[in-house]
Image (cartoon, rainbow, N blue to C red; front, top):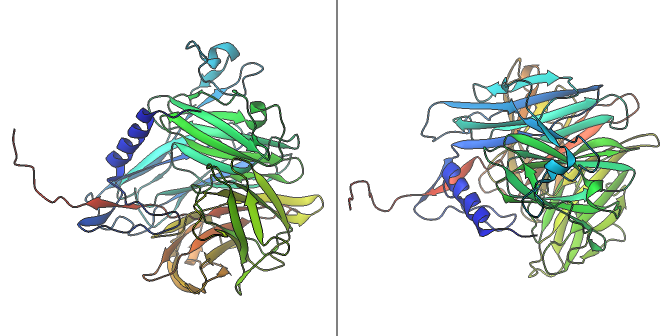
Length: 524
């Protein structure tokens, strides 16, 4: 797979144009503001929501939210935030599952397989926001609900979050599917995908821009690359989503694999919808960028099965110390003190009921503190027993540096998990429950998480709550590192339907250098 310098330069230029120049931090670290620079709110944000479901018995709720005061210090006084329906590329013949990229000689795969682009049925904005601090929701039961693409600017750009929550009442995809709609980027890692016969995993690629994107899909199994050229040169038309069934990309079924999505031209949003014949379905969000140390927060205390899937994507093997941050401290799971990852090969480990009835977060760190081999990781978590089981995914996530948000909380069914993975570095966190979408007064509480532990809380609720609300997590000054996740539990009969969303930092502000000299009056 190749990546052109042009695409790298274009991505950097686009980032600078939208947000200014961001500070660079080590993985898991907090960006430092260099001298002569100021941290300012971003002026524009982009989000993409994939098609929620094709089920005739599915219902999806979209919730949009911007934290109150997130744009403090912004130059503009107004803002807009809305999503619009996108087109969909559909197959019109056999063998079209690999996508619509170009073959050698310039002829596209779309021409050979009969793939067609279906334009959106309408262009009515979905969940448009007009003010910060109050969520906006809308619901659809359409089996053909499209992907959504959109942007926020001005005072509604910093911290803009959209949650997509789908309930499927019956069928192979039954369960609760949740996704915090991702931002567009040029690379994504998905440990935990499967191409086995008992799973149907689709990656949804959505292009927010006015020019086509060209994407490569790479699959890594336990023995390395799963090979094949079916995932190369997939063209994603402008304002369109392309679904790709991962099992069509290889002739070697793999129960545990890692997907790498690489946009060589343009940028896309990416998310994987996984459906298991026995365990229901859910979204697998992209994991945090590979780093030497990773944290996977929010394992439910009643998890009956936990599977770790990890990959060292660089040129070096990785040797990791495996620890579980429990409510009382860091422990080593029985029989798994360390984990060896061979470069380019996906490793899966069944941790069974590792939490033993207590909340937990998995912490992976190099056995050699000086080791730098990056790691991508995710968990598949199962609740329930027998025929009443449901699965969800927890990818490695970034720490909350300034602020993170989880939308679509109700009067019950939400659990907020806060992990302070470094022993001796306590985290002090302010959690704000927003106003309700139909009424209610915000409430704020502060929690202290002892270093090396995980704290599960029944989150605060707005006073006089009506409708749904959002939770905003903000570390206090001087706090140790903190990672967060939110679990939604909405049982369906005997099935403990649930979904987990990690809460990475929303990157609602960037560091912008202060001009050292006023050049506005200079002429040639």
